[in-house]
Length: 136
Image 1 (cartoon, rainbow, N blue to C red):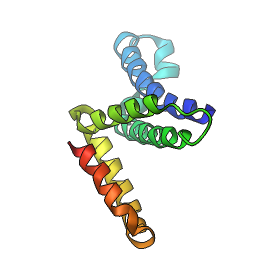
Image 2: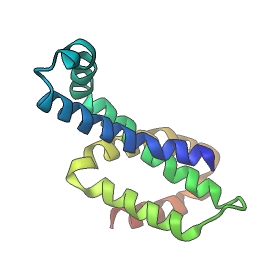
Image 3: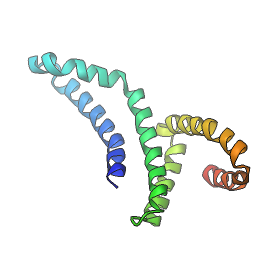
Image 4: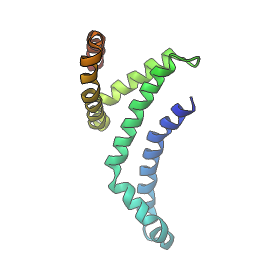
């Protein structure tokens, strides 16, 4: 469960880092302490927001799979897992996060589909049913 918590913190911390960098740059850009210690990290964060958003989407999807795996442990929580997958489905379709999530899901599909077709063709029907639910 500790791994789930650590993975869940990645999107929260990356978005908080973006907001803090923007706030510091906007309000303290004339401060000598800011210019000396924080300007370079803040510029780095603001110039790498795409990378942080990709990392966030990877962590969010990874957390979804960790929650599915946790259903096989004593810590199972079916409602929490279902609600989180509904949230992932929403993030797949919302314009702000759609690009990052859709590219990540496409990458997962390119990796998993050949393996399923080659080693477990009996999973094709369940996977296509899940995809139909996902795209509804």
